[in-house]
Image 1 (cartoon, chains in turn brown, red):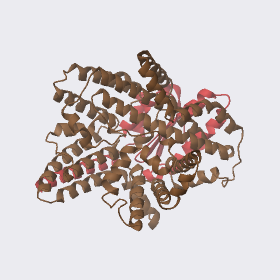
Image 2: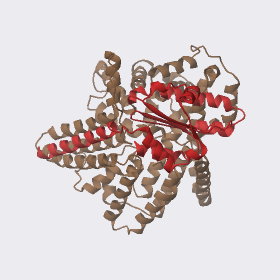
Image 3: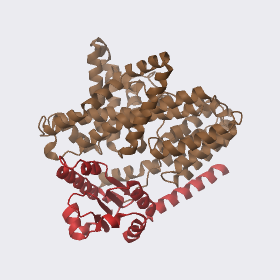
Image 4: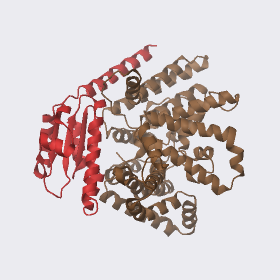
Length: 465
Length: 153
């Protein structure tokens, strides 16, 4: 079920809100039970059989964590290792088994046939949440959860279940026991949710249609500028799509009294790739830093080991995004650029004017997205060849001008909204006028609903992870 | 240790069942067709097409498929069509996927400039791959078609 679907907005969510808020605040356990049941129903919407996998993950990680906390006291870690292995095994079974067989086929020349399994939605997100919990229990960073229902709610909570943010258990442990819910939280959460919905429906979907139009161009229509336009459209689309989803998740969490971590902080204003990754998909970067990069030694090791650590972390970050070599290359691309920034160009970059640093960062990020949106490595290289005049395509033609003319306003608005100013302006004006604070979200909600009813182009890019 | 073994056993059984379910989703297209006919309106708006049409319109040779199901609206200005192909395995769907994409590109090219509704419909064409099956559909009630198809297999 999509947040940006008519069914979710006008059926699932209202019914849940009515039931949830009909239960008095003091009955937190009953409220948790309602959220848990609705979350499992939400999850079972697409592929009902996988709700059993979710229930298994809940039971398994809950039970293992109890053992881990006991073993920890006597200095053992066998159960921790076992639990991590099983979690990774489940993820690999669904996500990487086809990729592995394809790779073996390519290397050996054997024609291995297999049946691909549908990927359980959000498996990469909730597996990482489960692992953060058990590792934190082992490290003593959080107390073990004695209630399977509370732990079940943490793992399956529908706002962040299928596309993040990756919420760490220790950040919401107290909120599972008791949380503040009231008019203020509902208002705050609703505005955040509507902002996310508008980002997704009004901006991201339009940008997605533009990007799809470029990809669907007939060979004779392909031009260098059209391909650049496609890359710009995707760069903006993925930001509004994913940050819009995160806003919706954070807003929904707020409505129900939870505070989730921020996942985006205007990444396209960054002046270096290092800064970009501090602002993009913050919950994933934090996860990898905390549970992989730092245990590997982080940057407190000799340069050669540090470089190796970065390459390991970034190739796995790429692989987390998708079971395909272009994602591995995308991850390594960032690993290498971060190494270059750290050891070669970092100081040089600091001497450049701010605008130049900004443009260089955007250029690097945009090239990275080509690997990300391409179906495979060869398509990505083909796309890049055309972008850089090596694909034999012309410079521009009428199709490009038509696409640019018809999407210019959307692109200009998207560029402006990707910056910090619109948010600051909205916050300032909202503080000055409560009417403004209500009217703007209401208008955005009406426009978004109209878009949803009259448009069928509504994919969420991060659902496939 | 006992707890771990129980979890491992449950997981193994579940994964085996999921795998077998996916593998054993070897449903004849005739069954899928009868479900589509009973639960959707495709027979009202489209006609069943044969080998020549499959080759002519989709550039797919019937002998390359295990079996196929092809319905199309024969109206000159309609782009509505439904195609389901069963291949020998999921990793053999590539050429059929390419054929579908080429068909969409070609149709968009044909209608671009004077058929905005047709172009919009083609741009939001439904393409689903599941196991050894690929479904391509342009037309109304995409959610229903998707639901019937995914439930059938």
